[in-house]
Amino acid sequence: MEVKMKRVFILKGLDCPNCSAKIEKEVGALPGVESSVVNLMQQTLTVQSEKSADATLAEQVETIVHSHEPDVEVSEKTEPAVTKVYLLKGLDCPNCSAKIEKEVGELGGVASSTVNLMNQTLTVQAGTSVAASLLDTVTTIVHSHEPDVEVSEKQLEATAPVKKDEKAAVYNDEDKKRTIRLAVGAVVYAIGMALTVYQKEQVLEYAAQAESYSNHPIAKSILATYGKPIDQKQFSGFEEISGHGISVMVQGKKVLAGNSKLMESEKIAYAACDAAGTKFYVAADGSYVGCILIADEVKPDSKCAIAELKKIGVEKTVMLTGDDERIGKSVADELGLDAYYAQLLPDQKVEKLEMLDKQKRQGSKLAFVGDGINDAPVLARADVGIAMGGLGSDAAIEAADVVLMTDEPSKLVEAIDVAKATKRIVMQNIVIALGIKSVFLVLGALGMAGMWEAVFGDVGVTIIAVLNAMRILKK
Image 1: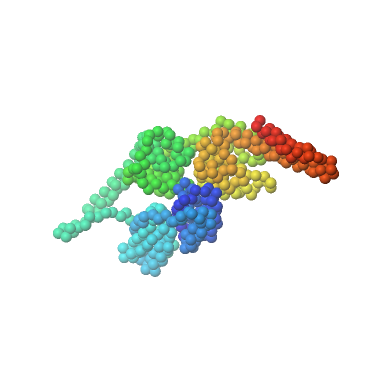
Image 2: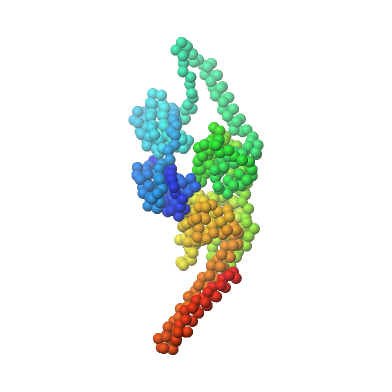
């Protein structure tokens, strides 16, 4: 079984979208690396790799980063270790227990692994993100050696020390029955807490608290709807999980806000929303709080802009979106797009763009329009990057070649029209200047052109070129 590892590197001082796209691509191409995602806002690089690539990964990442940004400080993000104890009921083979202990200890993010054969337990120390999903991996390893062993996680409880003068309690069958009844009661209580109905104001408050650090368009929408000041001094442990959402500690509560992938990765029992729109799920202290449905409005002039683009010669229009399949199809059909790709993470958008780049006709150009910070790598990769200036992030604007300041898609058609007219006038001026100067050069060589003809050939051509260029002002 090939062990997978997830490591997060802090790139302190990284602020170049173009460089971040190159770093992401080069690290992703390293042997054994499955995925590489740069979060420019958080200045982090998240790498998913095989165990075999782990030994030299940090050194290779630092080399790649410094080849593009020598002043960026590269360090690995560490997380506190937690202890997990697993019960291995039926384990009685010393040889198998040694193999299990070794294989679990080699897992990414695991600091130590110890099997106690007498107690039939496995004690593991690992990072918090790894420990949350470790049970399935441990079960797979154990069953590869001992298929009949039952694997379960032991709940650690704080115990008070027994005083020396106290007698040990007798643990009889009646005590066992009471313990079972107490355990069942605790489970029922936990389920009751999970089914607590939250008011929409509470759901919105948790969502606004989680999104208070973000400048994502969804975060801005939630904060605008909440409309109350937020004291960020009460928060700690803010973490933006790429492609999933946000985790933050609010007054001792762990608040999660994001998509369904975040709920599933954190093992939160949630009610899936089937309505069309962007689903924003919220959880607090391991319990599902609610879902906020966000529906993007198609700009009034978008459909007209797509139609006009096709009229002026744009061969294919494709939408790359992180929204779900239903929203992507609905918007694509409404706008009359040729194709769409939905539920894409930032790195997947780059992959789709590269695929489209290979499919384009020779001599044609590929343009990309975007406004979010996650669009920066795609804007840098496209032949022509176009950012929406009013709502666009600073990273997107910096990575773009063209910025539409009014956030009107129809202005894109106007920009292309102006660019074509400008190119046409430039070519005319080049032909006029070279043509007239060539004529006077020949006349001068034949002795047929004097001083005044030479002046006209110089100053006159300049005046003609300027007057011709002024026609662009009518656009």
